Amino acid sequence: MNVKGNNNVYSSNSYLIMGDWKRIEDVNTLIDVGNDPSILNALQKIPAGVGKNKVDQVVLTHNHSDHTGILAMIRKVFNPRVCAFSPFFEGVDHILKDGEILLCGDSTLEVIHTPGHTEDSISLYNEKEGILFVGDSPIIIRSEGGTYDEDFIKTLKRLCRKNIQAIYFGHGEPILDGAYHLLKESLKNVETSVKPGSLTDSN
Image 1 (cartoon, rainbow, N blue to C red):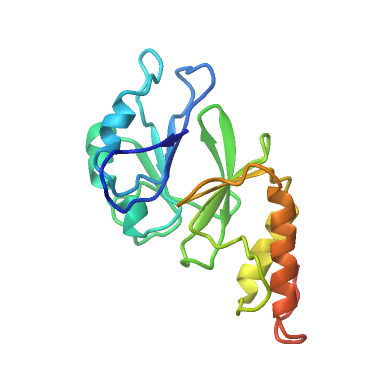
Image 2: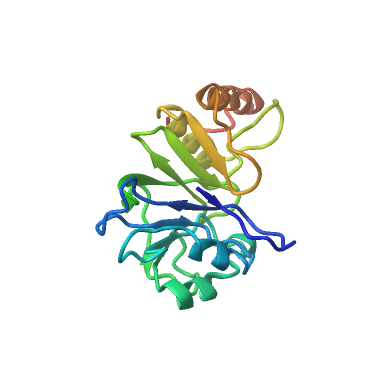
């Protein structure tokens, strides 16, 4: 679920993943903490299950302050394990690796390094439900033109090989219909924009 505060603060979306049955072994996971302190009250009101911590784990999609600003507050209140791709971000307990599998709620998410917005940007993919959390990674390219580096194109090709049915962004509303088609169109627009011979196609 998208957890929202009530302050007029520039902040990212924050997504809380919980198990359907709220079992003790489920890992309640907050994807990005945002920058709005009022989210703490919203989290406290969510029924997490008997004997369960509201937030067992935090996963940061990248290190920008609108996604990480209240991390210290979240740590103080919930004492979660904090995961991020960057080894240089203060307050991180576990450095993520590309391809790593995380237990989130009662499901697993694959960590996908998604450079483009920042070097430490990641996406998180739920294979079972076809859901992708992308933070601010600019994976939807709606027109031709622009400049793209090889790593970004490789990542977009990698995403297009997955059964992605819904995309949840760091800002704005999710794409719940036609997500895979939009990804394929994005890859087509990017490849059309790249001049022949300018990049090595390594798939």
